[in-house]
Image (tube, rainbow, N blue to C red; front, side, top):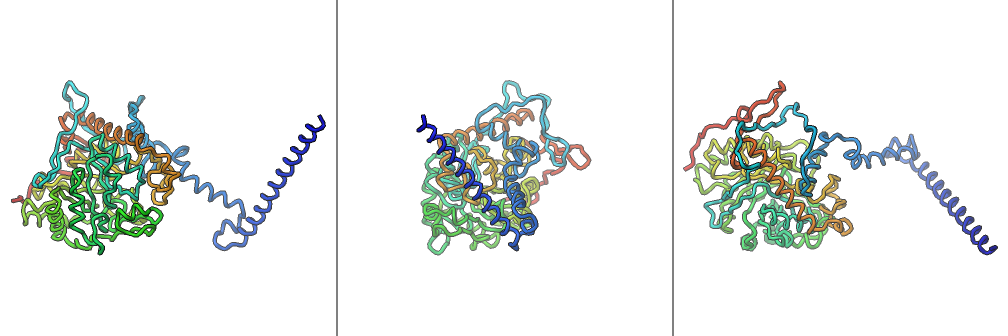
Length: 502
């Protein structure tokens, strides 16, 4: 009995010693922090309110992550609000997206789009599906696809291995294409069996010789893959128009460096433009060269700012003839964001897709190029309404990057560029990548793409059309300054053909 009591007393005594030792250490730390704060010269609040002022820094840091859960309303966050994210999550999980008691979408703000339902929609169906379309019919190997909604450019390096694997497998299952991004074709892009769009960035990663020039042998090697269906010359992207791609040094692993042809763990910064493309004539020459070498459709990606140059480009195509035209143009919105970029560029440079898409489509019509050049729209088009809007304006295909990142489990932590993405999508650290299971996430990628096409088809059926690309500007209205809506066909009238292509 006495032995047990002795052990008990010793345990209590140890607990007391530990408690007071712990409190003593905390006191010493607090005193040290007090004097450090009081006499440091960088932070005014710390000098005036030692210790206490650190609470502000803590709340400021946590606020980035907590606002979306506790304080923000469903439709007020940026870049993607809760309602948009919730729709994507449910679509990716293949959960019913039916709601009750009315929509929370405010129909009053200027720019709100409302679709025009037909009085007598087709009977016997609830949605319509896209038909096959041919890109580059004049090429040796044209691309035939019935895909409507596809995965936009995201390179291996910007994304983790597991994320690329999941996207590749999911895209193959959904029958949509996957753009490789400017980092070259990785084994993880290929392994899923999806159709690939090989993007050639300003640094020509994956397609360059030792001097950094575009290499014909590398182009032929890429074109030899049956999965590679088209080549895209990247002139600019939505996150940073006028600036080259940025991959922080911490994300340039030895494998990423080998695929790109650069040194590992050194920041990968692409030139702000192609050194061998300085005008529209050189752009068309480069498109024709790549098309001749590969035999496959070739186009370019651009963010519009000053769009007067489109007249120069299209006039040059009219002068050269039908065969000189690019097979497609990917139009990105200035509010893209899957890549790292200076805030000044993200905030202030370029036009959004809402303004630039009508301009591009109208210019193509003016120069009789609308049927020759396919239009691919991208930039925050992540829900059925936005995709249907782009189709009304004249897009042939829609690409999304961040939409598919959400389908992989992205929580909008805004840490893409830091290599500390908590879901492992944009991190190369094993402890974060551990949570991303490609087999599971591939199904979510597939379901997101499938449900997107289905719900766009529901809107199309309600509008009375037989195929999504039959949507026209008179099928949607947009709220204007006086609070009333007008047809998109009145806001953006389709011009007459002014320059006929020979």
